[in-house]
Figure 1 (cartoon, rainbow, N blue to C red):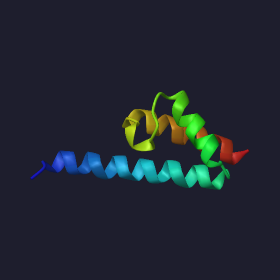
Figure 2 (figure 1 turned 180 degrees about the vertical axis):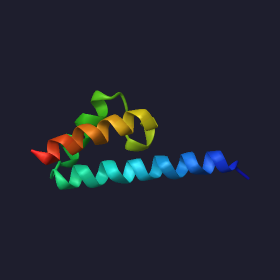
Figure 3 (figure 1 turned 180 degrees about the horizontal axis):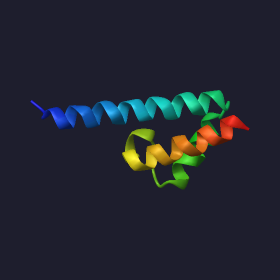
Figure 4 (figure 1 turned 90 degrees about the horizontal axis):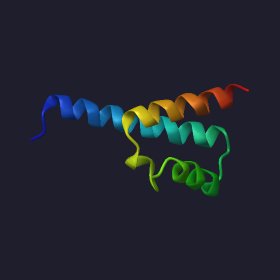
Length: 67
C-alpha cells in the first residue's frame, strides 16, 4: 500500500495532466502540435512530465488562452 503522501502526489500529478489536456483542447491544439510541444520538453507523453514541468506548461498555456 502506498503512503498517503504518495497518494496526494499521484492525485496532484493526475490533476495537472488533466489541466494540461483541458487547456490544450481549449486552444484547439492538434495532436501534432501537442506531440511537438511534448517533444520540445524531451518526452513523448504528458505522463512523463514532472509536476514542476506540468505547472509551468499549464501556466504558459493558460496565458496563451487568455489572449
